[in-house]
Length: 249
Image 1 (cartoon, rainbow, N blue to C red):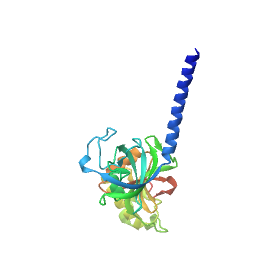
Image 2 (image 1 turned 45 degrees about the vertical axis):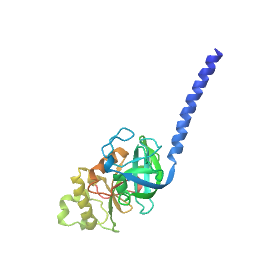
Image 3 (image 1 turned 120 degrees about the horizontal axis):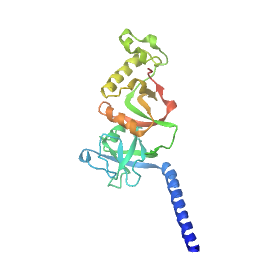
Image 4 (image 1 turned 60 degrees about the vertical axis):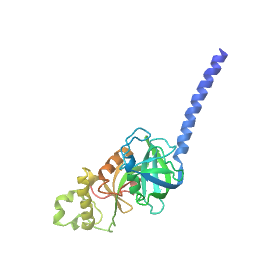
């Protein structure tokens, strides 16, 4: 009887220790920041199976890493040009130990490293398939277009040419100049089948973005629609209070 009790206690202890180790590992995992070089891979691997069983799509925001769990979300920050993008780990690599990670072609375009082939970056783990670690942040799609918001302006500045669309822009900041630019993007986004584009358009640090999106999956789905129209589009993770709505229905 004593032997059975001893074995039972050992099993319980082992299970608890295992659970605790997983909890601690995830906690430490979330704090990881790495600096180094990344490369990218594309045409020769497109449509082939990745290590997690998915078909590799060079136009999505994914990456290969030697050890990190599949589904890990990582912010890739290009130190040279200060561009950034969130990617999801779905493959193993790179082969060369000179690089920390292999980016998809889409991710390399997002941080403008595709032409150079490599980039010096900072990698920060921000979440996984279950969500992001900083729950105050949401996903936004950066469209690769700077705008300068004038100090004042209202719907009275609009010309008759835009009267049909005026209902979308009751609180737009900046009047006709910004209205024309936003209207151009809405037309392009409609072409990409982003039907709710007007209600998604926001400005973050004077850059036009779409959002917010609660999950990486839904944000990347819209990214895939606009990637050909905006080759340097990127997926950001930002606090909601940084986003200024550009249009309301």
